[in-house]
Length: 121
Length: 344
Image (cartoon, each protein chain N blue to C red):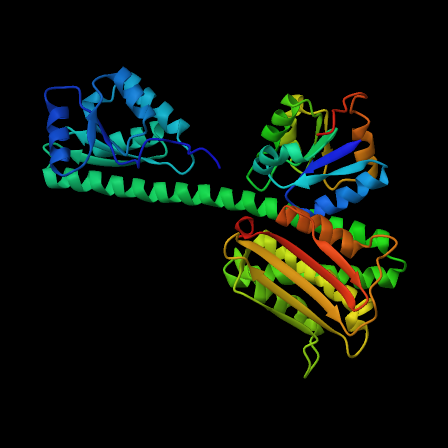
């Protein structure tokens, strides 16, 4: 699967990129804000998105997840803000707590339904 | 971030409860004449409504304090936020026993500041009492705002601490997976943490949010300077970086420097490195150029190490496009370019 990551901490993005590759998936890229996602969405091809709650433009992760869901991209929260993730739990397939482990990431990616892959842009 | 708890202004309006004769009008006119905003509660229902707006001071006549009024005010006092203490001015009849009323009201109305005056009250005394109540309210307002600010700061601090711990976890995990030995792990991890700690202090010492590119370069290359020879020549225009950009660039420079020492130009005595940065006046783009010379030829690695992966990932995020690596016979080179408006 092509996995996109919305995260404003480059060190975590760098780590997750490695974990995604370890699991045999493709890292589709990362952006640090909902604003950047909205303007650059068309440049990325993704089958699933990992989303942090607090981004460079504020607590916009839940809005970003809703926005992506409207565009048929399944989403998972990857965050240390579990209680806020729970409030928007209906928007996402699941929540992965930080710090992320390979196993937790693998388990959560299992939740992505088969055939949810969209056409590459 | 958080909604203000109240939208009642600044607790500077006086609420008057004086249902008999023209007392209320008289007090209101007196207060207005002294530039003190005041409104009248005509009955217990109106009192309940107006208390919702949270008055600065309540002025009440003794005879107005009927059981339902006492109860309405008590309920309001009970519901006040922790920082609030309603100043109450009670206008007693000439021969009323102040102590009895005081004891009674202290019991019924805790968390209020009671002031008692016997009628007829001298206007100057009443004004002075109301003003001291309003002043107390101003102090309470300050306290409330400080408490709000503290909550905000604690939230921000928590967010930053979590972020740093998550960063350290990622640095550790990524360092550990690339380390061939425990000594290697210790050395690399310590180096990266030192760079992270250093940039934190540099940003904090600057002004808390911004730091110059030159200061970041000096921080990272400082430990590698040998006496009498600058083997890393760093120069560029005046550029201010925000905390996030400074952190990313510092960690990137750390990776470039340690790589040069292990495998590149700085692995031999005569090798040198140039780091040049500049800002394009028209596009606002910041560009970074790292050029090694005088060392062994650079070869593209068969597998990506921590440094290369980090530079690619972090700078792609920072600049919006990936950096380029040159593996040349003269030595390793690296360049990155992106819009500065995102950085400051």
